[in-house]
Length: 417
Image (tube, rainbow, N blue to C red; front, side, top):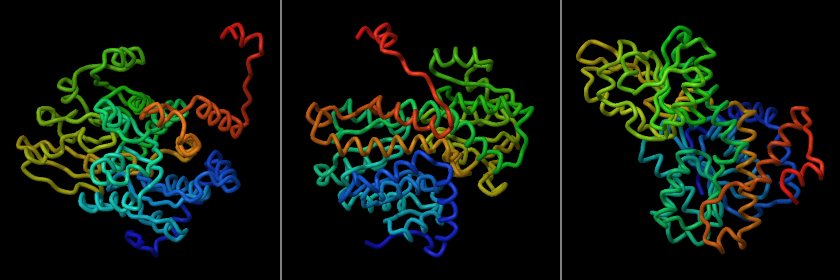
């Protein structure tokens, strides 16, 4: 099966990136050593669609060390790093992805990793699961289950489950505490600003930053903006989250009010149509827009293009749109996921936890394939608490931290057994 990557000769640069993150991901190091001994995925095909950069590549190698035949693609046309893809091919994995893929190429790469008939699916945003249920229904019987990494992907899974369309069990990796409390908050918080700062080379201090959405990702983005010296405005549709934002010290208002005030806008909602035509028309000259949600639908770039009298490249990965009133509005990375389309994604130490949850959830699916997951027809499943706790305990031990344990008497006092 021929790989489909941009340039195989780039593998040395990709290998340097993978080896760098490997040294900063002790959880995956420990799982790689264990998997080499136990081979939990021996003879199984795993289809993986996650942002294809160094940390994801190391996850792929850990799963391969456990005996898996890996079939790998990206989960965003602008987040694949061609040198990393080449390094995985050099290591013997099957890769179908390249940077700046057209929509047709991106879909074709998704097909390539599904047509082999995977037993396990590792997804980021739900594209693999969706296509598996539409174009590859004849292969559904061979799927043991899958793991979903993102809030957006879980929303899609829950919609499928409500409609009784989901045909195999999925582990909701994003819902694990060791994932969303750290990856979404600290990982997104840092990596979004890494992407914005390296792409714009502008100061954040003194600017008005509008954060749309105050879930765990939005909390992290707002907190880092505040730390960089910005005045932060939060827009929300959930009154509870809006109250949180107020009590965390941020201004809360509608987007129609924030549109005229913001210097930098960041959408982090998982919804579509968050910043639209009516908002663009109110924005000040030089406003900068970007998206930190999985899909490029939160900032309505199509509408912006339609009302702009001209558009031009303002700086690498920044398009400038001039409106009829003369104001220019800038969009980073075409409105795609800014921390990966304009950066390297979350820090290695954060993804160490997230990908450990992914790997252990995949292992759990294999070990329990004939048990409650399928027998009870339960298609969406939270990561077992023991896996979540095990990842946290291992991470603490790598940090050199020890914590107390309940005595038997304390356990009886709290739980009555």
